[in-house]
Length: 140
Image (cartoon, rainbow, N blue to C red; front, side, top):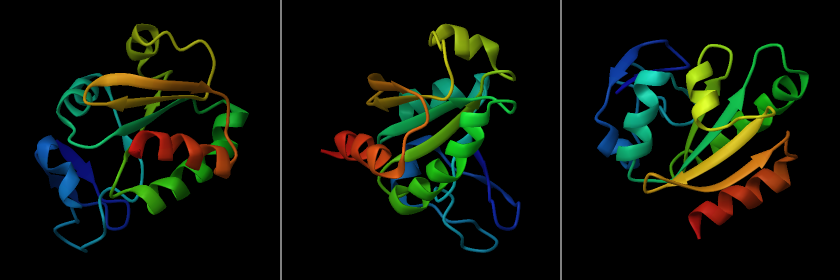
């Protein structure tokens, strides 16, 4: 899969199976998992099926006020837990097929995956402590 570094914008190629090895940018050495990864129809299935560590996906939209207020909380969680959980985002307007396939009825909606299987789903913007509780449930 191709991961764009949020610091220097370099595109890094990384096999999905190696996401658990704390990958760093080849140019600036920034952790590639310290920010949410934007997924699309092509990358979604690959990461869900092949990721060796749990995944938390935020289904959101640009126009959504609660999504905008939740985005920094989600990003901060990625910075804190990015070596243990892969944080991803799916723009439901850009990816309506994924939104339909996963029956997204309200946004933001968080879906947790472990070993390719959905394990939890929460709708609504979560405060930081509640989000950490959801993340901890993925880890233990």
